[in-house]
Image 1 (spheres, rainbow, N blue to C red):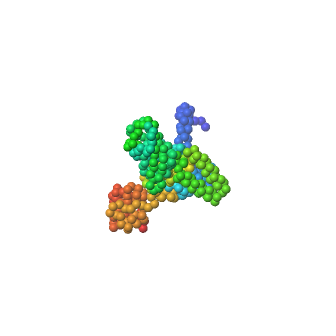
Image 2 (spheres, rainbow, N blue to C red; image 1 turned 120 degrees about the vertical axis):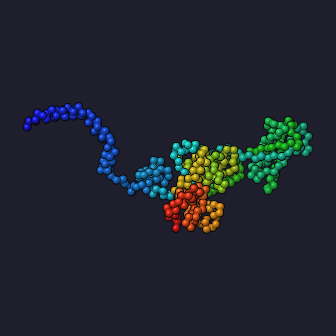
Image 3 (cartoon, rainbow, N blue to C red; image 1 turned 180 degrees about the vertical axis):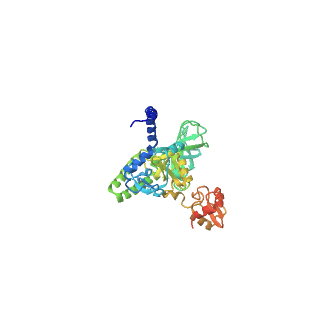
Length: 424
């Protein structure tokens, strides 16, 4: 069929336009594919990929590693640290803390950098306990030397007397002979409870005379103290007893550990922790141990007398562990100011087992029981002691406690919204 002559110019024009616009159409098609790529990929995945195995995966479910608690995944997999299969749990489910751990905090690398948290190892060092004895010099009776030695007597604290021995050498400071390296020796140590020592001071240049006030300092390696040896024997006994129950290998490990510690003690080395790493709450001493990158466990420890910048470790820590030596105070503040950091662990509440008593004017036994029963603020959902409370408020004839004074106004304004949240 012949095309009418009137239509031919139109068809020819359309053909020319399509031929010249094919590049533009090609680019537009590619851009359309890129724009719709997420939809196309999701559709393809739904049609071709099988559903994940290992249990239902939902927004309320996660997978974690019991050996490395910081490893958490939304999908079933294996721990990249210990290669252990991850265990399914509900999000927010409470996890038991290890023995001796009172809290746990995990922070991102960025927050650790901002807080300036740095770790240091728990290691053996030569620590010396210093005892200071002061008194006025007395002339030695019957001495005919041109520069006779002088003596003095003084009372000492029981903790200082434990490290003093007859014949022990020390150094002497005296204002009459500034800068001179004077030495002294312990002549006698009195019995308990009257701990009185007598010290002989060498006077080689005759600069000292009776009546001058002097200060003598004696240093004793911590590893040689009787208390240190007693703690080590008790520790060895407990580990051997536990090893006998567990397995012969555990018993052998305990014996080998005791042998190594005795050898180090003969060299004057003591297991110690840096002083900035210790958080003293008044009732306990806590050290934050790095259990894995970014995760710190608050471990209760027993420490000896401070020696310079270190504390000797009695129990609670092992050699090779790393503790937060800088920024430990900020980690402790994080667990206190943000209780939700550790609230997902059993045992995390041992730091403050019971809610504090209500504020002034509300300290009756009835109010105390109500606050302990309520536990959380109905406005913020935080514990009642998280913001300095609890604060007593009476709304519609009902006694309610909030975490701070700022929550009182919204509670009164929206009582119908917040009162149903309280326990019956």
